[in-house]
Image (cartoon, rainbow, N blue to C red; front, side, top):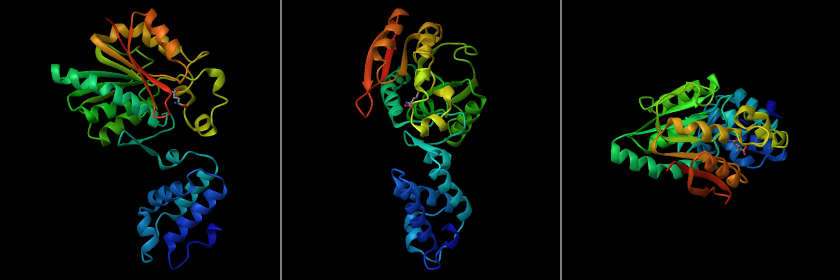
Length: 291
Ligand code: GLN
């Protein structure tokens, strides 16, 4: 029982063990890691302090217990912590932002050489990130490329506010702006890169997603319409009006969408430059230009 906690000799160590035991018994994968991260976050200590320093005052026990209960109820770890690492950056999450995935780091890696090249040649590179969410893609590119700047676009006001806070915390707000817009609706001007991890799950497949995704990621960030390809039609058709000469479109795609997205973009006058796979070996990122 939590009520019997903590033990007088090693209060934090006991909390950590109890959290780990409960998560593990409930079948949570990575129970030990989750317990450690929750204890560290909610008590403000490191694991080694928790285990070795019996004199450490115990703070945050009630919030920690509440957090473990949320994890036991199936909430993803990073939703409970309220942040997640992406490309080495700590990003705040909120209700209406997709939790950034490691697979999306492939998109950042894919686009960086182009952004660096344009920045060097012209002293600047402008990036438009459609469906920016936490700001993950754009902020990662800006953090790696000091001459780049960009606009994060999201239909959700909550996401725009979250991305703006993330830019502030990372010291990138002088090169980052966020705007609430339905795709290109509020956008003007031209960009060297149009980047996007759009919603791309076919509507009918949303129900079948893992519970952690279906219940905790915003559906608006997942649902790409009947065949999952609606956002690619919008970006393929409307994107050229917002793309600078020689510019690049960088898109995350579902693992089985390479042929369909390439066909949509080809019919709008784009050419595929590169297709990249994620860490699991799935097709994940496509780069297009307009000759
Ligand atoms: N990769 C996400 C998932 O598997 C989907 C993200 C998206 O639709 N852009 O849940």
